Length: 440
Image (cartoon, rainbow, N blue to C red):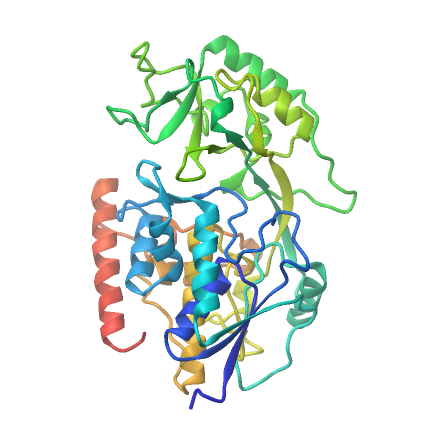
């Protein structure tokens, strides 16, 4: 039944790659189309598929956290993205961070070598017409303007846009290790992060310069609408003198081994590759001009002579009004043959994007096989994301990372950690039953 059908996937990011893998491992033929290297978005630079353009972290690995639970659910569903993230992991404390080049290269190679996956490098300008063969749109938040316009015409809804920012990457050998020290938060011994400590005076000078710096101007027609979970560092600073010390520069649990005390503030650096030659400035997304980034970030103790492998930047992210457009199966209400996956659907984050690719891939495979598409149990992290996308109030809808606030209400009054343990246990039990019932 499936041999004469081919599922088309537009977009070779995390969601598109995950969807392709889910389809191919179920015996479905896949046409995966990606516009690189013929055209790059403002944030992409590599020819590889599954390129990570912001942080190299997939966040917490703790299964009692919402994102840790989501990763565990995906692992149990044979996720390509999670498997390759672990295969290319770099030390990052309790988080799962990857060597982004090795990560993208491995995924690109695995998909290219699969006999059922045909990868075509070209730009798609229009939405394919209705067909018996499903199509998955997974072009991400940086969808090219022609395709975004075509999507807007298809949905009949006004497109929504917000802005996202990328953190700089610094060369390790340009850091002053007489000042910088290794430590993960609350860990006793040497940790996986480099820490640049600040006293009160250096912090005050830093935020003062940050407040008066020059930023990349927005175009007249562009309306600023940042995602709250990924704010530029200067936007956080604008909300008060102490906001950075309670955000990305929080010093708690990072005692300087030379003093035995927590610094007044701290800038953390996380490995970008296994060799430890480059480090990401954690939480330092920015829209500062390039010259200002170099000037201001070199005010950070230990970074006085920092050389940057990549400077920060800002770009527009696009997503659709999913509660008004999508079924819980990720099919369009008015175009059941068309599925949407990734950040374009209204989730935020690497893991969440790949998770929607996983569900879209599973459902497209079922459609090809003549089976009904499925929806994960609402108690699971996968199901909670689906509920957010399809059952939220359209008037109030915003992209979201996975969090326990998206899960069904929890009546018992127990400690947060215990509640996380109980939620995770229930979710994995429901997922196991769902799988045993033959849904995937």
